[in-house]
Length: 192
Image 1 (tube, rainbow, N blue to C red):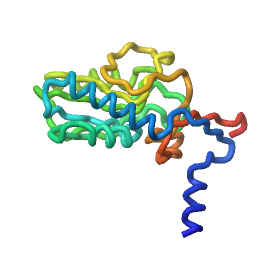
Image 2 (cartoon, helix red, strand yellow):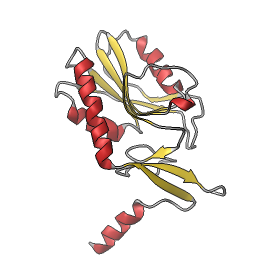
Image 3 (cartoon, rainbow, N blue to C red):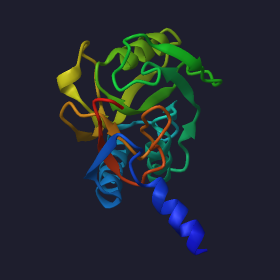
Image 4 (cartoon, rainbow, N blue to C red):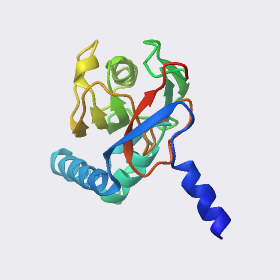
């Protein structure tokens, strides 16, 4: 058991050439999720809305958010890619997984991990609007308005952050750090 605990501890450390600075601990994240869930419950007319998490980054946020929402909320998933393994959005949004449910005349809530340039959310809003939902709203864990290239509506947000590269709680850098129970700023060494 000691060996397993030691291996788990190593997983929570930064990779070589990376530095992690904690921004939000698990307790603060949980409080942010509860605030968002309460706002959604207060402002969403239909208790049967369709929650659409954007994979992979929103996985943790979406799971906690769904547990805090009414049990009648349904879920389907979208997959997009815009980072392509880097620390900055490429600006090119690629749909990697489409939802399977019809959204016509339904209340739809897109659940994102982070909104920075706005390009991904703009793409999703435009794409899903063509399917004629009754309403289309956005909930995000993190909002980074200083990086905005296109203005987009964000209906529910847990935290606004400055221009930092954040990992943990589902957010990754080249698939690493998703499982961290906290959010951290990732800094790369110049030669990493």
